[in-house]
Amino acid sequence: MAEQKIMRGGRRVNYLNNRDILAEIHKSKKTYCKYLNKETDSDYDIIVQDIKKINKARIKEARQARIDRMKKEQGIIVEPKDIADQDLVFRVMTWEHIPMVDKKPTKAQLKKRAKLEEMFDDIDEAREDEDYGIDDQVHAKVNFPPFQHYKVDDEGKPYKVGQSHWKGTFENGEFSKDHGEMTMKLANMFIKLCERYATRSNWRGYTYNEEMRGQALLQLSQIGLQFDESKSQNPFAYYTAAITNSFTRVLNIEKKNQAIRDDILEMNGLNPSWTRQNEGMDDGDPDGPQKVKVTTVKPKKSTTAD
Image 1 (spheres, rainbow, N blue to C red):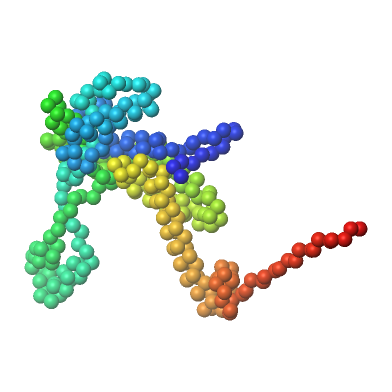
Image 2 (cartoon, rainbow, N blue to C red):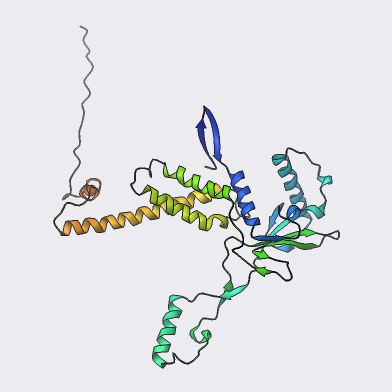
């Protein structure tokens, strides 16, 4: 379901929809980006996976996408000839401007390091990470898929007008992943999503419902901007799946803790929880309590007249 609706004064009102969520995601990501001109270069028309994909066909698609967006958002009908190729903005999904960092060693590599140090007793001797098999490098972890914005010049050659996770100029600036922020409206959307999801019939009866909401909200604050617009235009489903996983995780933890409590109570000769006492009903356990089947007999219709 792409959106949820509530009744207010007899009229159906959308409290959240994909278009508003996408707009707030875009505004939040812009705070982590650097643009030559924030007004003209920050809003993209089409997303491509490689700069080589910027060709005549993609330019045509970008122009049509801008026409459709202007008609939907502003109610303005624009002819294709009125939009110049040099005004179109292309978002290229790339990691080339993200620096490389040392890969976090795995448990096996850490065990290997400890074993070698114990065998050769060379703790005080300097050793390179390569000696332990730790020589891989990966891109630095970021809070959403990185990208760059491009425009084309009069000759049709693309040039960069913006990039994510950057502050300062393109030449003398530096990589940064924590100088931006999430918009207040998007944060309120996350709160509303968690609150509405917690009122569903299969979740609202649990006593730890508030803990579920808190865990889901924490999860959304961490992965909220990781939504990739190049793969989907349905963030509502993406966030709902994350909330469902968070609620299920808390439920499984609470069930595990309850099972431990019941085991301790039974070991001390006390009655466990009502759930443990009745768990044999549905499983057909001969030693557990059984459900009593009640059969009803419908009265036969009389065939004789009074």
